[in-house]
Length: 99
Image 1 (spheres, helix red, strand yellow):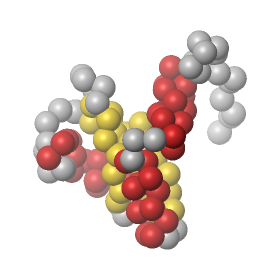
Image 2 (cartoon, helix red, strand yellow):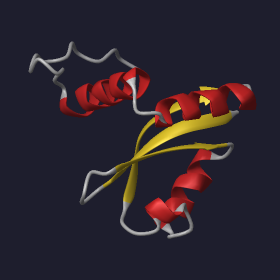
Image 3 (cartoon, one colour):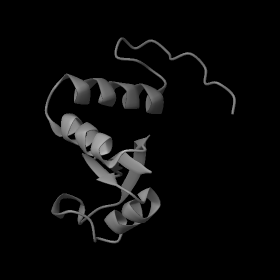
């Protein structure tokens, strides 16, 4: 499997979008200051990921999300809603499904 992921820096809230084949190892590397230049400092928390069977599909998705545009904005709105329980309009999200 291949993964596209979003990290959030705990103190500053800055975000990073990446791609990897081993998600756990990659997040650990970011937190061990062995990630990209952008993530070499701070404590990074995994806030979202998508799994792909195709490496090509994962790379395409990562590139699309890294562009400033609609796909990135919509994804970050979903992440915010998931983490806070509120959508952009301030309405509470419906309850989570069990499991």
